[in-house]
Image (tube, rainbow, N blue to C red):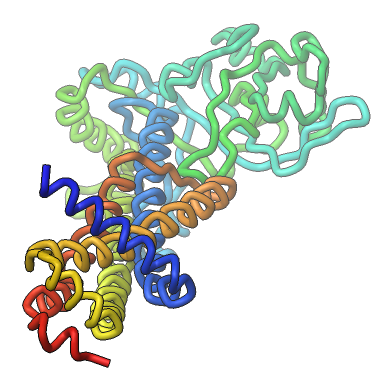
Length: 408
């Protein structure tokens, strides 16, 4: 009971001292505020990146290999050599599908940006994908309303189109798009379906600002010159590990490559993004926590300095408290509490500022605050307060009461 009442009394004295010197307390905690803001923002950005990454990888499908001209990982790539590679061909999909023992689905697609028009409304920079009928099985996409085009519609070069949700909102407003006619590349296309909402890809591009048409209709308008991709899905991870080597061999066969020749195609997997993301996150963590550590160190030194000043200013008060029976540990606790409160004050302000930054970052990129990082911030502030406040508090606790009473 005595311990609790002493702690309460120490907290009351500490809060009074901080209230008396508001400006000094704020300036002292400024580096703590900066440090906690930075550690919180770094964590919220990386947490947001992880969540967005998982959602984005789902858009690329599970257990899928993409074969195309350009590799996703550009490290060590000689672009002039890649430029001279032949593009993919639709026939490759049939070749691999008929010979692969592991692949469950093989699709072909072509990509470019275009303008979509409906009556007086238009949308520019829309992602256009020409694909085979089984493209949605590869990507893990679903139809929200309507249907996907059929294999026979691909063979007959039917002008049918599937729309993304952002495009529906942009040009149809409140109308039901199904059965309506839009213009793509000067051709009329009938809307037969709408995709489910996907969101942004890696916090950047809008994956719902897209349309999908049969690959044959795409070829009729634009030709198959670039942006071509072969997508191969496997039933599970084990089949993927075995199947990708088989597919590589089939691609070398269809490309008629000699044993001594290097691959003239790229085999891309979603894990490539995972490795790149890990590198980006490590860079953010290293840079962020270096600055955080420096800020907290400077903030801790500031707290130690101000606590020494506080002890000196209140030397007579310490003497009076000791003279009326206060124990050394009570004096120690009083000043330790003051240092911790000072540090926690900076931490609370830092978390609040970080929450504002998190909201703003999330509007343009991706960020997500979690409870764990707030608890980490509280723990760091307490640690800084105890570590840098102990020496001044210990000095106050060990001061001689007679000498303290004589201090002017």
